Length: 305
Ligand SMILES: C[S@@+](CC[C@H](N)C(=O)[O-])C[C@H]1O[C@@H](n2cnc3c(N)ncnc32)[C@H](O)[C@@H]1O
Image 1 (tube, rainbow, N blue to C red):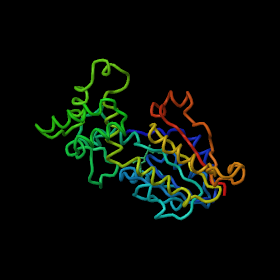
Image 2 (image 1 turned 60 degrees about the vertical axis):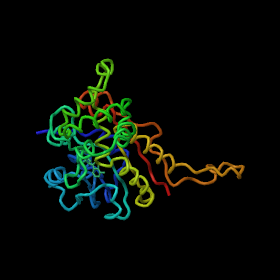
Image 3 (image 1 turned 180 degrees about the vertical axis):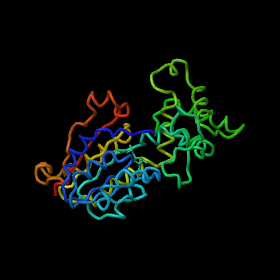
Image 4 (image 1 turned 30 degrees about the vertical axis):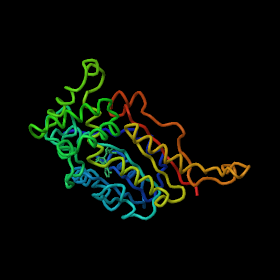
């Protein structure tokens, strides 16, 4: 069985300072690593868990059995949490895919296994990597690879895809990997990291609308978080981290009015406070046992009024 090792577990739970009777949200249930730690700390409190993946939800009910009554699992995007819960004491997001999703060849998330192009976290949605690769036009493919994958050869790869699919649909992960490789120079092919990593990341983000979900959620934080409530988010690439950093900065600063001589910052306290000015990353010990932890970054924010 493919296991998932939770990233920055202790650091995230410490940052949330769980109250025994609080209302909490785990927006990314996965294999319940963070979920269990929160549940262990709750007495009269309740935990709402979200996941897009039906397999994660089924497993979640098994793993959390002994905490029945203390949690609710909801099959929906975490960006919709305000439709189910009004005010909460804390929220955790551990973004991206879990190891069982990534390492299950059939899900099509990985360039390491040959399977049909898919990458849907939610198998009930229509848009898959197959649809994108075989139907999006040149400009759209180029934009996705460039923006979501920061892929330097985006245009070349997009053009090659358009050319290849004129002959027959691109069906599998390995067919796509071959097309990507054929666009790259020997120098690039010899660089560290898999040559298809960036394009696969960009397709996954597009299929699951990952950045828009995150941004919609960030916008809702002021409406959903109680006073003294906390949010902790673990992200795995710079596009996510940049969004989180900018929103947290906006929430925790007061805009200066240039007409006033005294700095507004000294007069009005913002509603939010950063829990960590510097990002929290994994310790050397964690990196030794979990390669997924390499790119993980943790940021937290607290509502102070
Ligand atoms: C990295 S895993 C979480 C792992 C979990 N914290 C643990 O320790 O076991 C991310 C999970 O969040 C889910 N997910 C990703 N984006 C989501 C979204 N927008 N809404 C709901 N679930 C999402 C994925 O399906 C996956 O199961």
